[in-house]
Amino acid sequence: IWMRLGFLHLLQGSAVAAAAAFREVTRQPDAAPQAWLGLTDALWRAGDVEDAEAAVRQGLAAHPRDVELRTRLGQLLLAGGDKSTQSADIETALRLARNL
Image (cartoon, rainbow, N blue to C red; front, side):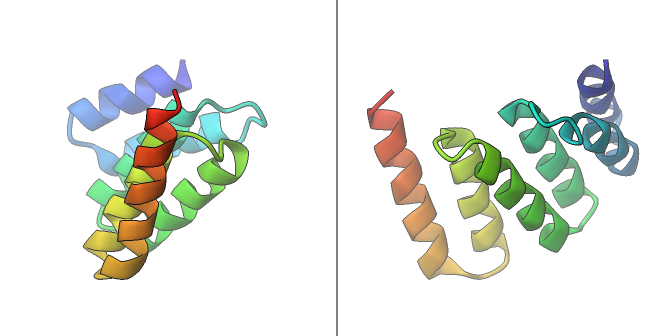
């Protein structure tokens, strides 16, 4: 229910409330990659790119082969101006996607 609530808050434009809901989900050891994506999206929309990057890295620690999380890390790094690292993460995501 927390993940659905998080996505509902995102649709309503309430990034802070969405982040709080997604944090509830990601506290669980078996949190799905979509929960981590929701959290990073909410934090990014709230203007907190640094925490969004930290969250996506936590998600990748739990799901190292997840293409969407890897891509999100690349997007966040690009948004922060780190083009060299972003390219490596996007390339890794593409390689992982080819192996699905």
